[in-house]
Length: 389
Image (cartoon, rainbow, N blue to C red; front, side, top):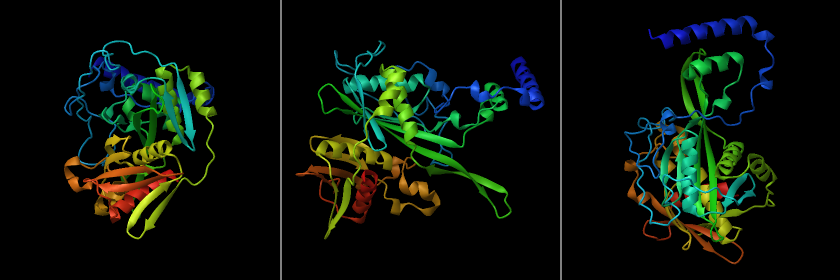
């Protein structure tokens, strides 16, 4: 046995004996340990100094935090190839120090917060890439053409109860304890309405491990089920991003806490006029564009392209009515575990926004750009409307 293994074994034994015999005399650990809202387990591979933009293949980096039973095998980083930037562009910071951002505004609408950053999208893109890397968080999707990043499934160590025994074991045997929850973040970067600004949106998805028992109460297995969106985690992650971009921590926290909420009123309604389907959003085009984009992020649509000038999101959608019951309820709502090779080319859709006098209309077009009023189009519009209302 190696010396380091013997040392760990002895240390664990001593710590356990001390903890069991005298933990009652210890001071309250809540006075010693800091409050941790988010403490994600770092991936060792992400600590390496990756060249930006990276050229990552499926064989080079494995994501150790993939949800069990979430599809065929372990999810890995998607292959990512970015065209080399032209000289003089903001993306030509490779190997250099990216400038800090001086102007970051927090905007709020209900539970949704987003950032308006006084910098060009390409500069923000590279800084956020470095933010994930320095925090040891792997990305399973990076697409600069549409400004989307999706993290792997992250284990939040802050969800594990903190006590003397647990902390001692975690320090010596990190894999001994694990959280029963996983988090995934989807980040979208868009050119802002004002020149020279960037809008940054972040949405959260959560999973929770549930124990399945037989009739006698014996544990048979565990399964992962979706849990509610945690807007507090979204705010916590936005705060970390703000600090990384250059904001002072206290100022970032104050901005997020003090962001004024717009007056709440019904924003959207689903229209069925004969065989014509649409969603009316009671907002101007810019606001409706933002709301629709966030709705697509939350529901799990894959945005393959977008054209703000024409008001079109090009999305891929997995019809939940076509999935088998064996895949479970999760597979019927989201499709992060669907192999792209299994998706029918006919399931390519365009979500079209058209400005009206006091509102914006949202319709669904097929891949050829023709109005779609099928049952699948109805489900797409229903999911969007449920997120916007």
